Image (cartoon, rainbow, N blue to C red; front, top):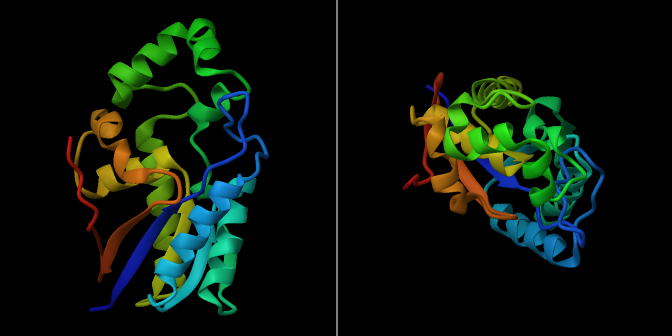
Length: 201
Protein backbone atom coordinates (compact mmCIF):
# COMPACT_ATOMS: atom_id res chain seq x y z
CA UNK A 1 0.00 0.00 0.00
CA UNK A 2 1.53 3.30 -1.13
CA UNK A 3 1.73 6.19 1.35
CA UNK A 4 2.41 9.85 0.63
CA UNK A 5 2.06 13.23 2.33
CA UNK A 6 0.10 15.89 0.46
CA UNK A 7 0.59 19.55 1.39
CA UNK A 8 -2.09 22.09 0.45
CA UNK A 9 -0.62 25.59 0.45
CA UNK A 10 -2.61 28.78 0.26
CA UNK A 11 -0.91 31.58 -1.68
CA UNK A 12 0.62 34.49 0.24
CA UNK A 13 -0.83 37.94 0.86
CA UNK A 14 -1.47 40.05 -2.24
CA UNK A 15 -1.30 43.75 -3.06
CA UNK A 16 -4.90 44.88 -2.64
CA UNK A 17 -5.04 48.52 -1.56
CA UNK A 18 -8.67 48.96 -2.66
CA UNK A 19 -9.76 45.88 -0.64
CA UNK A 20 -11.59 44.37 -3.59
CA UNK A 21 -12.64 40.79 -4.20
CA UNK A 22 -9.91 39.79 -6.63
CA UNK A 23 -11.26 36.48 -7.93
CA UNK A 24 -9.38 35.62 -11.11
CA UNK A 25 -7.72 39.05 -11.44
CA UNK A 26 -3.90 38.95 -11.93
CA UNK A 27 -3.00 40.46 -8.57
CA UNK A 28 0.58 40.07 -7.33
CA UNK A 29 2.00 38.99 -4.01
CA UNK A 30 2.89 41.76 -1.58
CA UNK A 31 6.35 41.77 0.08
CA UNK A 32 4.70 40.14 3.10
CA UNK A 33 3.13 37.53 0.81
CA UNK A 34 6.56 36.75 -0.63
CA UNK A 35 7.92 36.17 2.88
CA UNK A 36 4.95 33.92 3.70
CA UNK A 37 5.63 31.83 0.59
CA UNK A 38 9.34 31.60 1.45
CA UNK A 39 8.49 30.46 4.98
CA UNK A 40 6.26 27.74 3.51
CA UNK A 41 9.08 26.70 1.20
CA UNK A 42 11.56 26.46 4.07
CA UNK A 43 9.12 24.24 5.98
CA UNK A 44 8.68 22.00 2.91
CA UNK A 45 12.41 21.81 2.17
CA UNK A 46 12.91 18.63 4.19
CA UNK A 47 9.67 16.96 3.14
CA UNK A 48 11.15 15.29 0.05
CA UNK A 49 8.71 16.96 -2.35
CA UNK A 50 8.48 15.39 -5.82
CA UNK A 51 6.42 18.08 -7.58
CA UNK A 52 4.41 21.27 -7.08
CA UNK A 53 0.95 21.57 -8.63
CA UNK A 54 -0.43 25.09 -8.80
CA UNK A 55 -3.53 27.12 -9.61
CA UNK A 56 -3.33 29.23 -12.79
CA UNK A 57 -3.89 32.47 -10.84
CA UNK A 58 -0.86 34.80 -10.77
CA UNK A 59 -0.60 34.95 -6.96
CA UNK A 60 -0.52 31.16 -6.73
CA UNK A 61 2.06 30.89 -9.53
CA UNK A 62 4.31 33.38 -7.73
CA UNK A 63 3.91 31.46 -4.47
CA UNK A 64 4.83 28.17 -6.17
CA UNK A 65 8.00 29.64 -7.68
CA UNK A 66 9.13 31.06 -4.33
CA UNK A 67 8.49 27.68 -2.68
CA UNK A 68 10.46 25.94 -5.42
CA UNK A 69 13.40 28.32 -4.91
CA UNK A 70 13.30 27.90 -1.12
CA UNK A 71 13.33 24.12 -1.43
CA UNK A 72 16.43 24.53 -3.57
CA UNK A 73 15.87 21.68 -6.00
CA UNK A 74 14.68 21.54 -9.59
CA UNK A 75 11.21 20.41 -8.61
CA UNK A 76 8.75 20.54 -11.48
CA UNK A 77 5.92 23.10 -11.25
CA UNK A 78 2.75 21.92 -12.97
CA UNK A 79 -0.20 24.26 -13.56
CA UNK A 80 -3.51 22.57 -12.79
CA UNK A 81 -6.72 24.42 -13.68
CA UNK A 82 -8.79 22.52 -11.10
CA UNK A 83 -6.83 24.23 -8.31
CA UNK A 84 -8.17 27.62 -9.45
CA UNK A 85 -9.84 30.19 -7.22
CA UNK A 86 -13.49 29.85 -6.26
CA UNK A 87 -15.88 30.92 -9.01
CA UNK A 88 -17.78 32.81 -6.30
CA UNK A 89 -14.79 35.13 -6.15
CA UNK A 90 -14.93 35.50 -9.92
CA UNK A 91 -18.67 36.20 -9.65
CA UNK A 92 -17.95 39.34 -7.59
CA UNK A 93 -14.41 40.25 -8.61
CA UNK A 94 -13.48 43.91 -8.78
CA UNK A 95 -16.02 44.88 -6.11
CA UNK A 96 -15.45 45.51 -2.43
CA UNK A 97 -17.39 43.21 -0.11
CA UNK A 98 -19.76 46.05 0.70
CA UNK A 99 -20.41 46.74 -3.00
CA UNK A 100 -20.88 43.04 -3.72
CA UNK A 101 -23.41 42.65 -0.90
CA UNK A 102 -25.44 45.53 -2.35
CA UNK A 103 -25.22 44.25 -5.92
CA UNK A 104 -25.83 40.56 -5.07
CA UNK A 105 -27.65 40.59 -1.70
CA UNK A 106 -29.35 37.17 -1.98
CA UNK A 107 -26.21 35.41 -3.17
CA UNK A 108 -24.06 36.86 -0.39
CA UNK A 109 -26.62 36.10 2.29
CA UNK A 110 -26.76 32.47 1.18
CA UNK A 111 -22.98 32.21 0.88
CA UNK A 112 -22.49 33.28 4.49
CA UNK A 113 -25.57 31.73 6.14
CA UNK A 114 -25.99 28.46 4.25
CA UNK A 115 -22.95 28.01 2.01
CA UNK A 116 -23.79 24.40 1.15
CA UNK A 117 -26.72 25.76 -0.90
CA UNK A 118 -24.78 28.57 -2.58
CA UNK A 119 -24.74 28.34 -6.37
CA UNK A 120 -23.21 31.71 -7.29
CA UNK A 121 -20.28 30.92 -9.60
CA UNK A 122 -20.15 27.24 -8.63
CA UNK A 123 -21.47 24.99 -5.87
CA UNK A 124 -19.20 23.99 -3.01
CA UNK A 125 -19.75 20.35 -4.00
CA UNK A 126 -18.40 20.97 -7.51
CA UNK A 127 -15.47 22.93 -6.08
CA UNK A 128 -14.57 20.02 -3.80
CA UNK A 129 -14.89 17.52 -6.65
CA UNK A 130 -12.49 19.46 -8.90
CA UNK A 131 -9.99 19.90 -6.05
CA UNK A 132 -9.96 16.18 -5.27
CA UNK A 133 -9.70 15.44 -8.98
CA UNK A 134 -6.55 17.59 -9.12
CA UNK A 135 -5.07 15.94 -6.02
CA UNK A 136 -5.78 12.41 -7.23
CA UNK A 137 -4.37 13.26 -10.66
CA UNK A 138 -1.13 14.33 -8.98
CA UNK A 139 -1.00 11.18 -6.84
CA UNK A 140 -1.51 9.03 -9.92
CA UNK A 141 1.31 10.85 -11.72
CA UNK A 142 3.69 10.59 -8.73
CA UNK A 143 2.56 7.49 -6.78
CA UNK A 144 3.89 7.21 -3.25
CA UNK A 145 5.66 10.59 -3.43
CA UNK A 146 5.11 13.73 -1.37
CA UNK A 147 3.45 16.56 -3.27
CA UNK A 148 2.55 20.24 -2.89
CA UNK A 149 -0.66 21.81 -4.23
CA UNK A 150 -0.82 25.62 -4.21
CA UNK A 151 -4.38 26.91 -4.27
CA UNK A 152 -6.81 29.29 -2.53
CA UNK A 153 -8.70 29.46 0.75
CA UNK A 154 -12.20 28.27 -0.16
CA UNK A 155 -11.05 25.49 -2.51
CA UNK A 156 -8.63 24.13 0.11
CA UNK A 157 -11.19 24.27 2.90
CA UNK A 158 -13.96 22.54 0.93
CA UNK A 159 -11.52 19.79 -0.06
CA UNK A 160 -10.67 19.19 3.60
CA UNK A 161 -14.35 19.22 4.57
CA UNK A 162 -15.16 16.72 1.82
CA UNK A 163 -12.35 14.37 2.85
CA UNK A 164 -13.43 14.64 6.50
CA UNK A 165 -17.10 14.05 5.56
CA UNK A 166 -18.11 17.35 7.16
CA UNK A 167 -20.83 19.73 6.00
CA UNK A 168 -19.84 22.55 3.67
CA UNK A 169 -21.84 24.79 6.03
CA UNK A 170 -18.80 24.63 8.34
CA UNK A 171 -16.56 26.52 5.93
CA UNK A 172 -16.75 29.92 7.64
CA UNK A 173 -16.18 28.35 11.06
CA UNK A 174 -12.89 26.73 10.07
CA UNK A 175 -11.34 29.30 7.70
CA UNK A 176 -8.80 30.29 10.36
CA UNK A 177 -6.79 27.13 9.61
CA UNK A 178 -6.14 28.37 6.07
CA UNK A 179 -4.59 31.81 6.41
CA UNK A 180 -2.32 33.39 3.82
CA UNK A 181 0.73 31.23 3.17
CA UNK A 182 -0.59 28.44 5.41
CA UNK A 183 0.00 24.72 4.89
CA UNK A 184 -2.63 22.04 5.44
CA UNK A 185 -1.77 18.36 5.25
CA UNK A 186 -3.54 15.25 4.06
CA UNK A 187 -2.25 11.70 3.69
CA UNK A 188 -2.64 9.48 0.67
CA UNK A 189 -2.90 5.88 1.88
CA UNK A 190 -3.59 3.48 -0.96
CA UNK A 191 -6.73 4.88 -2.54
CA UNK A 192 -7.78 6.81 0.57
CA UNK A 193 -7.24 10.46 1.42
CA UNK A 194 -7.04 11.25 5.13
CA UNK A 195 -7.23 14.80 6.47
CA UNK A 196 -4.47 15.44 9.03
CA UNK A 197 -5.39 19.11 9.56
CA UNK A 198 -7.51 19.73 12.64
CA UNK A 199 -10.96 21.11 11.81
CA UNK A 200 -12.76 22.72 14.71
CA UNK A 201 -15.82 24.95 14.63
